[in-house]
Length: 145
Image 1 (cartoon, rainbow, N blue to C red):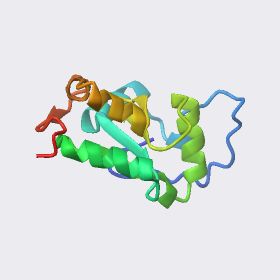
Image 2: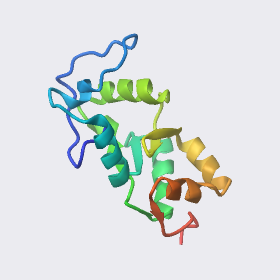
Image 3: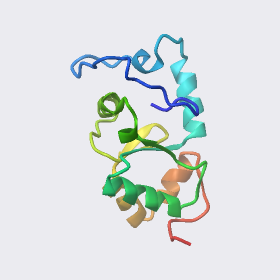
Image 4: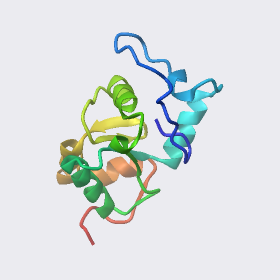
């Protein structure tokens, strides 16, 4: 869902049939992409990706908590509601992660769920370990200092 530093516009894709298997060329367009190589590169560049809605209190809560960890590289935040292809992004996220609400937090390309799931990892004091195992550097264990 995130390509390099440019987010591809999916408005020209048309509709996605939720009953059909998802072909990643929907996102890649006509380009020939080596998906295993691309996914590995993106996971290294953005070990934490937050698909958010700018007006959503749960999204704000999750982003605020992640900020307290001073994660490097910084989480990639995609404000889905500010994109023209928001319906398509939501459909792709739901299909690929089985998480249909926002925020949808991906760590190394796997959804950990939403704000409540992130808060639970923080409360259990396991979030730092999860982030570090994903390849992120954590300068602060969410204490807000």
